[in-house]
Every structure is written in C-alpha cells, then in structure tokens.
Length: 81
Picture 1 (tube, rainbow, N blue to C red):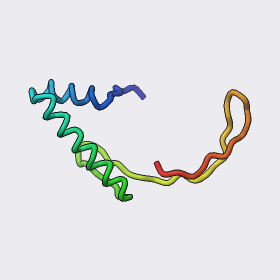
Picture 2: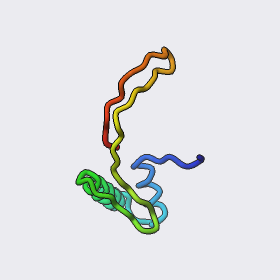
Picture 3: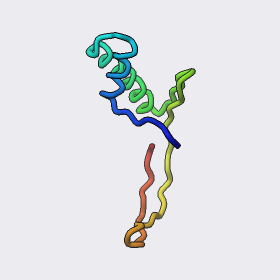
C-alpha cells in the first residue's frame, strides 16, 4: 500500500498552506480535532466522520509470538488498539 505519512506539524503546515489561514490558528483546529477523536475513543465509542473515515477501538486477545531473529517464543498480552 502506497501512501503519504505525515506527522502533526506536517499536517498543520499543509492545511495552513491550502487554506491560507495562519499556522497558529490551524494548530488550534487540528489539535481540537485530535482531542475529540482521542476523547471519543477513550470512552470506548467509535467515531465516524462521514466522507473521511471511521475510528474505532478493538480488543486483541493474548497470543504467542516468535522473535524472528532468535526463534524464541514469547507471550503477547491482550491489549486494546
């Protein structure tokens, strides 16, 4: 899968350039969006932004993994992703 990887500051710069808004205003807006997504997911709720994407929380069960360099097995604990 090809795609562009962007960190938060690169996203802010791209949005500021595209909208001609001051970068300090875009920092506030992007931060607020990330806060809403994070807070919603922290409550265990899914978030659907129509026309953009869906964010959700899921549970991964504990499993056994293998270290590829040594071949040793290791327990991987259950976790929320």
